[in-house]
Image 1: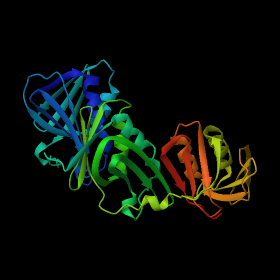
Image 2: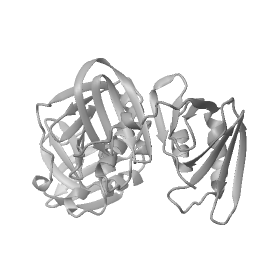
Image 3: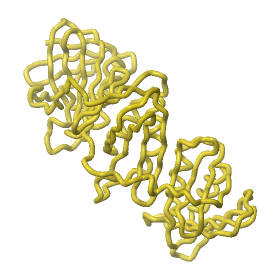
Image 4: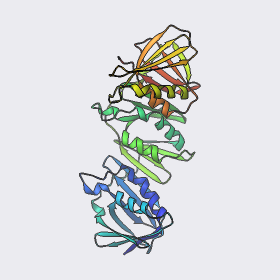
Length: 371
């Protein structure tokens, strides 16, 4: 039975949209598959890992016009299509429990698993609440904080990103317990308070799929999941059940000593001294020695080797010697695009607050460390 006859890219684009969450090795073999369903002249592609589900709709040339549904290995089908030339014509034919992919003189035979066995997330018609943002706004909110989210922390609620709707603000916060990134965006109208912790994997997929455009993204809240709809894509994710730390208590308010510095100059200096940091250790320390109009950046390693940089800054307060995790500083400076950053602190034992001059919406806090 001939199912699809179309150009390679017409088939590959929707497939690439949904395959990001698919792992090649799964406890359930069907979770490695994509569910392809034809209904009413529209073809949907759907994948899930039981925590996240991504669905997109494509308009393909279908011969004949008939409904069908099947599941096939997402990665294998994607790899096959990628191996073909961009203008290649592709046909998909079903025969019993196999899918035949043909293009020119190339032919591939893939195993099919029953579509009715695919663990599709049930669609809920009515959401508890919903808001709409521009895609570039949400993409920006995720980009500025996702690098601070913990990875495989036993405090499971830190392995996700806080999305908070509060009155006329939409707030995004990420933390691993040693640093915290915060950013807020203004909403057109007041909204009731909603608070969800979005898993790290869902954040990563959204960041890839969202466009830098004015097009809308609708965020719908349900009892234990959240749904994002944009550009013909629907991403549904379970939320992490837990209480996110009170970020307001972490943001310092008495950091009265500060200096402004070129982001690029600071980044390049840190990259150079990091060559002699303890590369194998998770917590790589760097000393920032701040004195009158001068910033010394010092890194040492276990072999007693040392790297030092000196930068000119505008600073006339008392001297302070602060030790921080250099990885946390590099993460920040690599993920923002401002000309300068403002570093504020109280003393050597206080958290450092890093902001973008002229931008009150973004804050980055780094806890001091002992080295």
